[in-house]
Image (cartoon, rainbow, N blue to C red; front, top):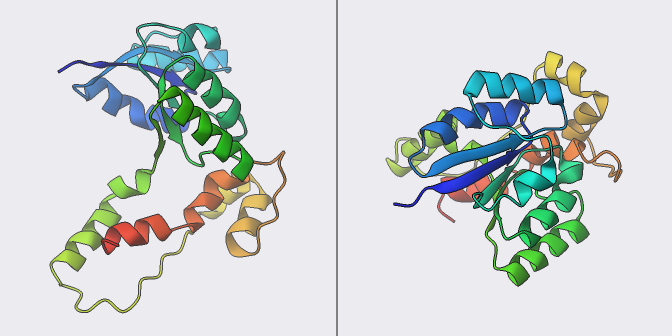
Length: 202
């Protein structure tokens, strides 16, 4: 079975968690990684023994790359994704897909136009807790399902690091500022409909 040449844009904490899986997976061959933080990129190169590039365009236009894993801050998803699709590469994008509905629609239209697979990574599906709940539901261990309620709570330390805006978003109403799209990075977890539908097979 043919391996897929993989390029990674964004070598932060999320990419660091996925890199071991990409390295072990029989169908992925990491061709290169890029990050604007040169020190971070050097650290990931040393830790995982991967090739890195200092030019984003070089990675996007590398003919050996079939798919790009996009793990940059949300405010950059739209612009980079459009470039990647125009270069004929498929995309696995971290959530949220885009910062606005308009951006998401444009990304969808370009994916259709270029016949590119543009997928979004939903990591919660692979968490032990959700798979365990699904097993219990399917085995009818919990009895007849009446209601499911899920809450997103974060340690005080995490909130202190990412800023008060996240706390306000998680526990009150959402006020959108186009210059603060990172608020969606955590706030996205409050939208649990896709997890609920998966749990109960809707």
